[in-house]
Length: 278
Image 1 (cartoon, rainbow, N blue to C red):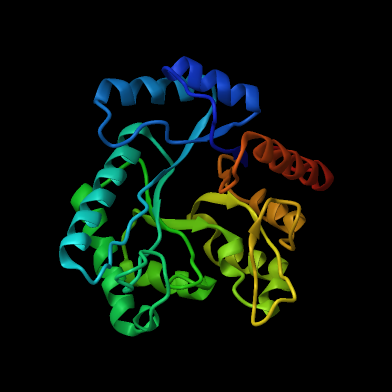
Image 2: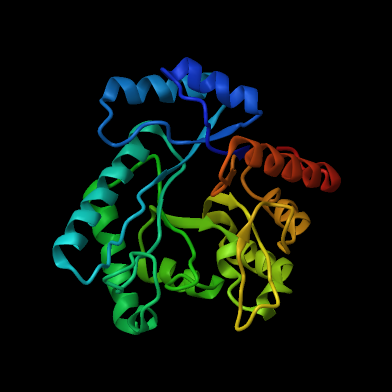
């Protein structure tokens, strides 16, 4: 697997981008350009990454493609099509989004309709629409698991893979987002092993973060820096090591370069303990 994360130093082109990734010791990166980039720029970054043995992990398409507002939904579907096309142009391993929410006020928030069969079918229809419009040949479209919407368990993800029935639909793995109850907090190793066992060949990119469980009522489970929570990183890294050697493990959601340095240090330390090469 390959550890990666965001860069805080502004880069002026492919060479300075690669130099910063190398300084940080990353072998994977988030996509450095947006869908508006011209083909020459995209090719330059793709070539620089390949020459430096850096994998471009993912293009984020964060938006609500199942919004109850039809105009918003159409715009976000187009945004995801553009992001998937960019991922294919630059050779990223995947384009990633969440499935979205029927909550008109919060694109990633809870709603009673999110877990019904009609929404499941809408997600299937929407993902097909995104993939079929682009017809990627080098990349994949993926959904990140979330607490408030499908896919919210391994088996729910498997159900989506079967229902969507597209070769270019794959899996994104963020185990923290599968830990949505106190019971599951104490089963992170089992949850990780199940996901890899059932979806391993489909996994295109992964996120690295952590989760805590406090004693505040009713349930308080904040996301925190890797190493400060309860995620079983020994199992996580050992399981990812059984997959494609280029699977990226991407640090995210931290507030500063120093926080990322500490997070990377923890992940590298655990990797050394379990004999995994990052």
